[in-house]
Image 1 (cartoon, rainbow, N blue to C red):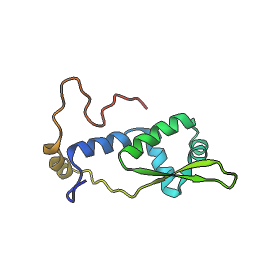
Image 2 (image 1 turned 30 degrees about the vertical axis):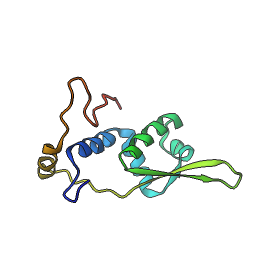
Image 3 (image 1 turned 90 degrees about the vertical axis):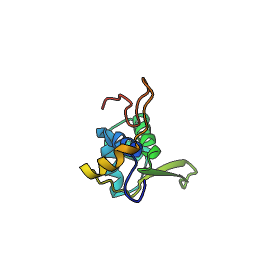
Image 4 (image 1 turned 45 degrees about the vertical axis):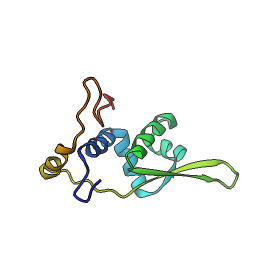
Length: 118
């Protein structure tokens, strides 16, 4: 992100990452406290595999971060926490970001357009 806001491609990636109900719930849950994968999966009622898929997407755009820690019994636990962020979405933000969009090659998805379903 620049001082004036995200580039067009960054904005698409951020919006794409947040355009899923599971990922919105993950960010909301991590807002309260950091959590490890199994704990968060139980809390949200989704499988660990599905949770990890969504966490990777959120981590790729910088909305969450992860740290690997050892429990008292020596088990590796990956903790996730939400990183502070603020994205202002307004006509002015979009107008500033639009000129910086990459020109897609025909047939290539644009950032944030993976064609996924919730």
